Length: 108
Image 1 (spheres, rainbow, N blue to C red):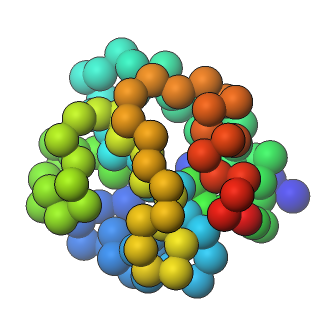
Image 2: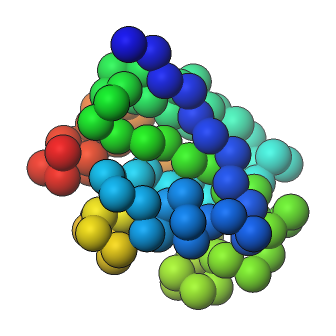
C-alpha cells in the first residue's frame, strides 16, 4: 500500500487534520526554508511506510497563515501529531526519519 503527503490549507485543516478519524502528522512548513525542504523526502518515506495507519499532511505557513497560531506554531518546521482531536506529540526543528518514526510510533 502506498500513501503520499497531502497538502492542506486554512480552509481544510480542521476537517483533514485536527478532527480526522485516525492519527495525522501535520507539518507546518515554508517553501523558502531549506530545513523544511530537506524534510520532504523523510515525510514521503514515512507516509509510504505507515500507509493505512497514519496520514501525513503539510501546511504552508505563508499560504495559510491563520492555522499556525491556533496551534502554537512559532517556528518551522513544526511537526504536530494529532490524534483524537488534539495534539498528542510535537517536534520542532530538523528531523531525521528516525526522529519522525519515534514521534509517531507510540500513537499508532
